[in-house]
Image 1 (cartoon, rainbow, N blue to C red):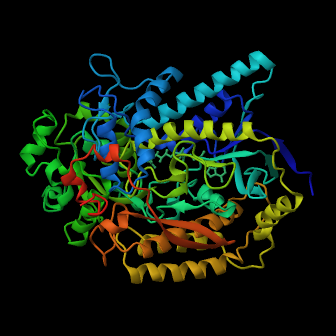
Image 2: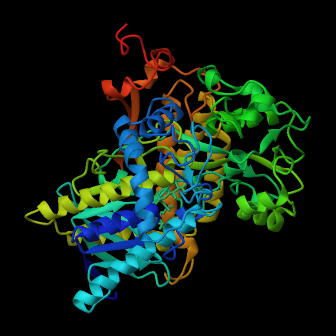
Image 3: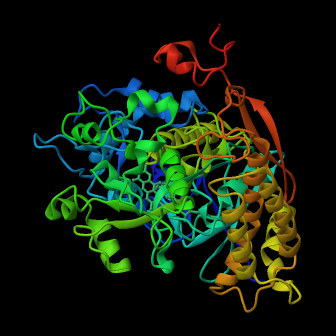
Length: 624
Ligand code: FAD
């Protein structure tokens, strides 16, 4: 066997999306030798697909906005299950992170008087999303990469080596973390092209691997979202929280079948687009839940006036948080008022002039023209819910991103807590920057303080290698593509947007069956670029993460945010006080247990009206 390629760093960042890049910049600025490892090409992370914008209470378009309003909106959106400290840090620090991006070279769209422009989005009281047309993620990644290059140029000037302190390993997949005496010692993985193995030794690892959407059949997520970071954390001994909460974005494409699930940005609604059923009715007015009644318009006339006079009118219900809109669309389709292809109509063509639509929503215009032959400046789009984002993830310390495993940190979509039971649009990009920076600092401080660094044992390296090679010694058993399809169908049908006990139980039975079959996964050929082998390894992660989702979904007997139980349709204040925590209880088994939520700090509670809190908190929490 060829000799194992070995590298040693102070901080390893797994993932090159917004969270990973911001973390890497911070670690390098703390003087750490830092490596960024990513599964796809550098610059192709999921973040690049983000369209609508980044939420930050800069108050540029409405001066009433401030961190307290953003905090309130985030907590309401998450139905008060959020980690309030994360929501507080996020609301306070997001504006600085946007400004900082401009110092890295980003150029956001501007208001007429030259300030960073901000647009409306669901659940945000004021226009709050800084944006670059509908290609915000691209600008975010571009400017973070630009910053990385400038740091590498500084390092070159000092040492003669561009990669002396910050090195990127692209098209490289981490398959296991290496833990010694309960502490992080490094990571093991393979080059996607050659299949050759590599060992990274490092005392600090930051997971920034994004989400889990590829376990669902209809999803806006790309091939990389196989829950690797979630599973790596579990296997390393860390805990995951809030895994029952999956965001089904209300508007994915529904037609043609080859593009089903691709995202239709919320900016379409933020910029005036309305939802209608097959009878032409603007149905969202029938779906405003009690807790939001005071904040949303109860007539089309008031909703329409809000676009030009937000101070004296309430916002239209198309801009309710995503979970509400997704459930409403689902109900309309189920009631037989859907479109021919099982969606509803989203129309911006009758709301804005054509040139305004192509200016504000260029990607959407292009996407529908190319993929569905629909001209959105003249025709409505057909849309329906699509699996979009996982609120659940690694349980972390809000200030440092540290998990319960010494040396293991997490930031971005792979971490849990910040968004509670439902994320507001735009709050992910800001989350990546706020907590990416914090995790970079946390991981650096941890590495700097260690007197002795753990070293991966040869036994753990050999075990990681054995597991990675196992699919080549399968004996004609299971095909990874078949298993993946069955997993996606199971999660979509039985643990999807509307859930009930008997269906989740059936899903768990099927997952058990899939896990047994996964032991005989068999791949053909060699390790050189072999997508079947890559999928076989990804499936190990998808199965364990799906089990977390299903087990937590079965236990939570209420409906809240991205978890809707047909058999328990109401929100229950007692459940607001509980988190469900997943841990690994074997190589591919998970346990889910309840844990009390930390009570919200008094001064943060004081930001809300007591009447509103009564809708979410129990009497004893309110001291009544
Ligand atoms: P990512 O950007 O997904 O990066 C993950 C990285 O981890 C990648 O580099 C990947 O290669 C790497 N990786 C994964 N597994 C491994 C492994 N095993 N080994 C090595 N590397 C690995 N949010 C907003 O706030 N505003 C928006 O407008 C918005 N629009 C969106 C539009 C779309 C179509 C989608 C899908 C999402 C959108 N979101 C939006 C959500 C947001 O984009 C994501 O939540 C966010 O980008 C996640 O960033 P991240 O840094 O956590 O992960």
